[in-house]
Image (cartoon, rainbow, N blue to C red; front, side):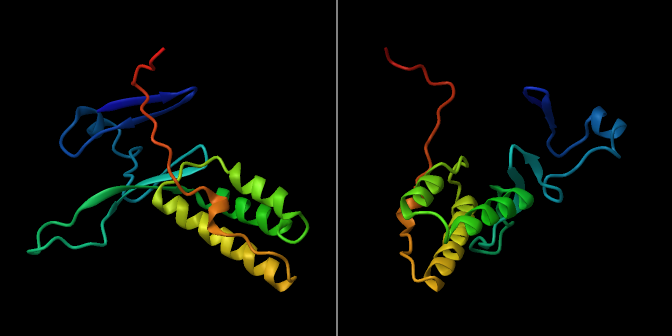
Length: 149
C-alpha cells in the first residue's frame, strides 16, 4: 500500500492481493480501472491497452491521464465563447496558458478544442490557428533531481 498526500487531499493505493485493510474497507474501496481518480482537473485511470501482444499473451495495461469531463467541457466552452470575439493574439495567449501537462490523451483533447475553435473561426472567415499554438510538448519533471548551482 502507498499513502499519497497533497494538501488536504489524500489517496491510498493498494495492489492486487490480500490486505487486512482491503478486507475491512471493502465497501469504500474504488478500483481505478472502473472509477477514475479525479484530481485538480485531471482524470487518472488504469486501462487495458488497445494493442494485443504478439502470440496472444496477456493484454498490457497502462495509466491514462486526461482532463476530466466537466473541466474539459468548461475549457472547450471557454474557448468557443471567445473563438470569434477575441483577437488571434489574445486567443493564442489563452491557448499557451492552458495548465495541463501534455500527456497523449490531453493532447488529443486540446486538439479537439482547437479544431472546434478553428471551425467556428472559419465560419466567420477569421484566421485559423495552427497546432503550434498548443505547445504539445510535455515538459519532463524530475521532482527528486538536485539542481546544479
